[in-house]
Image (cartoon, rainbow, N blue to C red; front, side, top):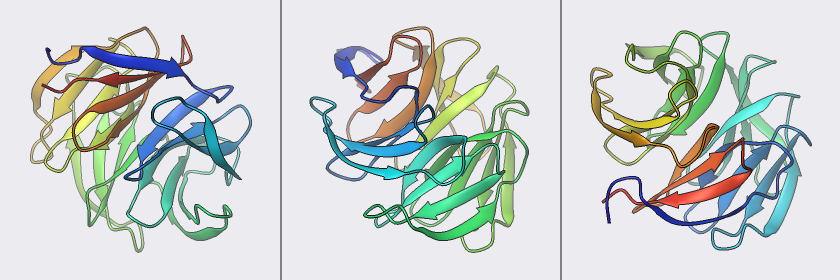
Length: 208
């Protein structure tokens, strides 16, 4: 098994799936077409639970151990959402105008800007920018996820997935995505889940 090999795939239930995150047992996906956030089976993609997304352009998703965070590009906000009923618990300003990706590192939030190709580390209480990393080697960051040590980033221009150092934004390694519309990423502790916007599939990918 090599880095980026497809372990399996299944159809996404979302009309227009973009964001993806892992809560320890299930996947959550953003449906930008229906303005919903759906909890789905990581084996079949069957919807287990669905909540209304705040805003009208929900993109990246992340799980902080208790709640879901959603990046809304139109509102330029990051929403903390109750996964049971979709209630907004908290919101903070996005650090730039084209934030699509969001991830949780256990203490802080990381966002990505698809035009500036930057990764910003934020204080989740007020959105204060702690650090900004320029990732010049990537053409258009679509989403990213945290694996406990590094960030994995999907590039909409090159259709590649990059492992990025959170210290300086340098590229550690990369591999070709499974299709042509790289979207949301989620790390389950061992493998990478990836949603592709062109073929409407969720892929489980090897990180070996």
